[in-house]
Length: 117
Image (cartoon, rainbow, N blue to C red; front, side):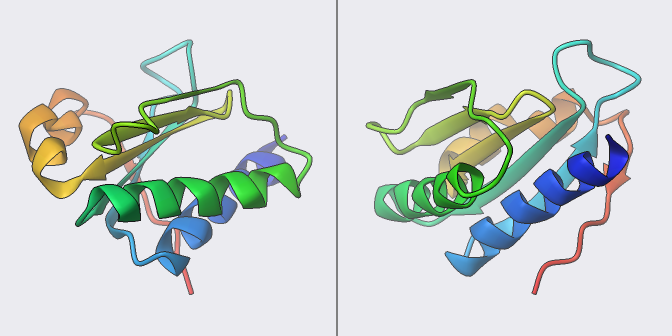
């Protein structure tokens, strides 16, 4: 299970980085939430980039054993949420990310370093 979870986090981070997502952050929610184990949060500079990052992540997920539970916000392109069960991905337009500031709301959870190439 741990290897599968690490694989999913790495897959998401790499797919986002390939589309030039920035400020990529992984938050460990295992001690704080029963809904998911991790948040992956990243930023983009435009609606089109938010959608491209989303598409990149979904392409990688569809080619893996992982499953998408739900997707919200794709059309507006300001804040897309991908529920991958154990990992919830938040892809923000940079201005919207600053407005909602999830890092502050979940500021007491550990951050996970996930290298991307």
